[in-house]
Length: 101
Image (cartoon, rainbow, N blue to C red; front, side):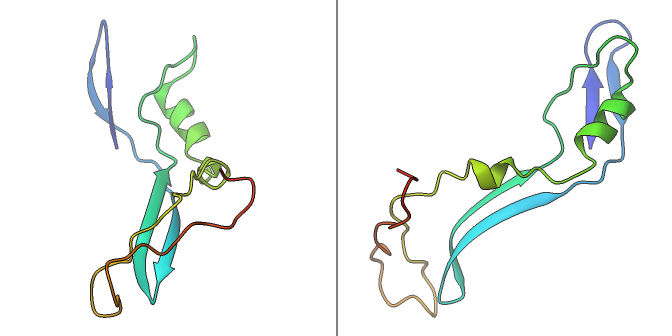
């Protein structure tokens, strides 16, 4: 992952991070009908006084981003995937999981 600094002394520097990808999938007959992913690598960072970029990245990337599972936002309908195991192009139907909508 590469991060660029803005302002005086700007430029790009490479930093090695332990990237975790959290994934949710809805499968239909072994095929992915819906998928959502999140990574733990931040899109941007703002160091506080006395804090290095490497310190921030170490803090932010030390564990998976689990917010995906709390904020999934499942779709009301999911289209059946096309391919060998899909029998039609109809939707799979409405979710019966309470509290999501």
